[in-house]
Amino acid sequence: MERKAGQGGIRAAVLAVIAALCFLSLMPGYAAAQSSDSDKPVPILSGSAGYFNFVTAGQNQIDAQINPVLLVPLGDRWLVEGRMECEGAFQRPPGGGSYGGEVSKNLDYLEADYIANPHITVTLGRFLTPFGIFNERLYPIWIRSLQQDPLILPLSAESNDGMMLRGGFPANARANFNYAAYVSAISSGHNNLQTNRDVGGRMAFFFPGPRIEVGASFQKLLQDTRTNSFGFHFAWLSTRLPLNVHSEYARSNQGSGYWVDGAYRLSQLHVWQKVMRHTELAGRAEQFFLGSISPDEAQSLGLQAANTREGEFGLNYYLRDGLRIVSSYGRQFSSAGNLNLWTVGITYRFLFPLGRVGQSLSAQGMAEQRLPAKGGVSQ
Figure 1: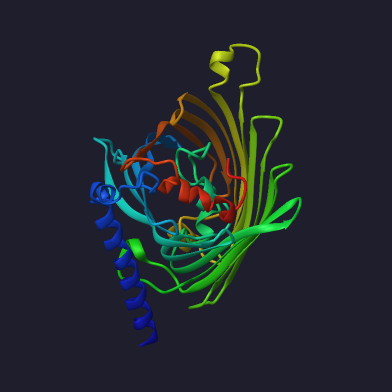
Figure 2: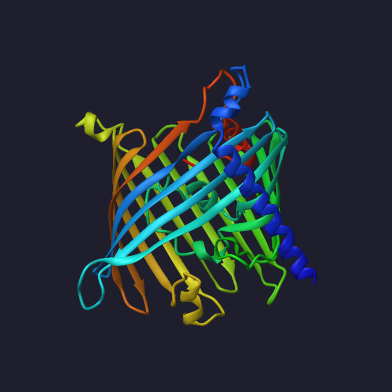
């Protein structure tokens, strides 16, 4: 009975947020007409679109996706935000023929945020799991420098349904502390809303001088095996070079591993400056170790079926702000066999205000107001 009540409560909460988001997204003009104050925040439609060719061990996959993000401010303290992922993945059959595949539609998050004060934000609904930094800060295709997912990404749930508290404050003159803590309910009704019953969080210190962040994450499963997961992360944005570095380590009963990546803009080179200032080099090294589960179970979770090492190098070119050509080559080594990974594609980021933008906060500004709470370095 408690499980059914918990499921019904979280579904009702999520459906209420969905209804509010849909209603408000259809009436931006009405909301603008009701306010004569030009300083009122306005809704924002943002997101990304991309087209890619992923070639894995000689097998080509055509991938097209669009990921809209809707931000709807309700006054100065409330913000409703959500992101959909619509993706089509198409391959040729093993015996040859035309490309075919499925188009998937997933709700990444849909949450209502209450900005209580500069140090705490209360979130209700479906939110991105604050475990490590890749899932929250680097996952969108227009942000990440390499389009392949890290091998350890499936070790933690990407989304949870429940409640979260997050915030940040100065620890001293040289460091800021940020945190996120959440509780998630069981949801098993709809594929897009499935989550486990667990608790977890992340804490980190950000040092504004060198622009470095170090932090740790924890997750406790409150059902079935009641296992623990933990991780650590590091991020650095150089003050002297157009260079950013990120890394994560994660461990659970399903497996463990790490990744380290970096991206460097060639804007400081003195040759072919018009071209080089739009060119970016990227690289990633990573390793995954299979845990106490079977290879078949690992594959069903999106993990590697054996211990795996991988290296990847990328070359990206920015045609203009928000529009980028991406390419990369990687090599994967494991006892299951070695293979090559090729990627080429294009990403585009869009941003449209759904109303007249005043001099104060837009919805995008309200979301960015929470970035110090979410924690320091992303790009």
